[in-house]
Length: 410
Ligand code: NIG
Ligand code: FE
Figure 1 (cartoon, rainbow, N blue to C red):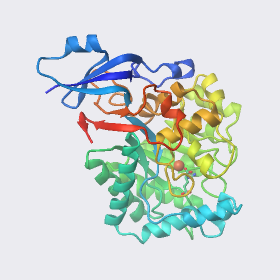
Figure 2 (figure 1 turned 30 degrees about the horizontal axis):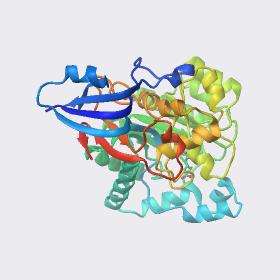
Figure 3 (figure 1 turned 30 degrees about the vertical axis):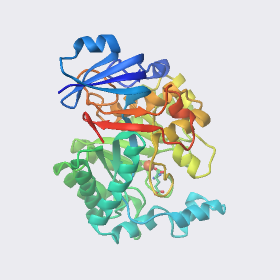
């Protein structure tokens, strides 16, 4: 049975070349006024203006009128940390009182405190908490995510977090691309190099052979993991056929963008302190920058990553929530788009490209999601808005009217 979604004041198709969009292309959103979308068997059959889509429709289709609302592809969140135990409310208060991320970590807060709370949680409770968070993301318009482990702090617990992600993915609602972030904080009693070796030799082979991860990530920062640690982990990732994503240049310019370029990473994430040389290195080696304004905002900083310089250099920018309990308890990509526009001076069109087509490409799903084109998954959102720019404009409102995944309304 075919379903025709009609009455879209604006249908944002994101139709275009099958690759991430860089530079001025980031303003190309494939906008159709008075658009319609025809879906069948969970896939898009046609997307465009009402008359041309109707010509393709078979007799007896089911029609749904969205009554002048905007329809976009389901949003894609290319950087999240959604499975962990406990909260970080104490860190939140300490930050308000003026302590820095590094100071809080030294006082027993930070990532290591989430290691302990995660290790003390039952796997079924982590799964239940993850389900609730993913449901909230989906109710905010997100239909696919990249999700990292990273709060296990041991081989056993990291693999267990990846298994939780795999169970969440198998539930068939949110599409999840899993990443092993074994090297996040350095667990108590280890040096970074010795734990990096454990990640490379004990986590990566199992995660790869059991199909539990598609990417590997490393938090490269003073007091966390070094360039050499990242090299060791990246080399094991390559050997086992896993892609590389890196947290770099978040708290200072550590030459992380150049490192991501050297290691052939798919993405370099954060980049608040990236240099011009770093930007050029990303461009030169085709590394996609994933920018995370939510963590800048929630850490109370004003050092947003230089999105404009990246777009002007022709890079295809991605924005993502960085959802995590410590630095970014941000579940909503429209809130993230708002920050990208107001603080990083991205246009609403660029912000929407950044968390649809570019994000999908950055997680290896560019052929399936991120745009509404024939053959792609029928993952889309109907918004309580008549102009797509409203997605980035309103603050503190949830504009979601309907979410559809694989042709099914949630
Ligand atoms: O992406 N920077 C490192 N990792 C997370 C923060 C994790 C945490 O504080 O729990 C981030 O911001
Ligand atoms: Fe992160």
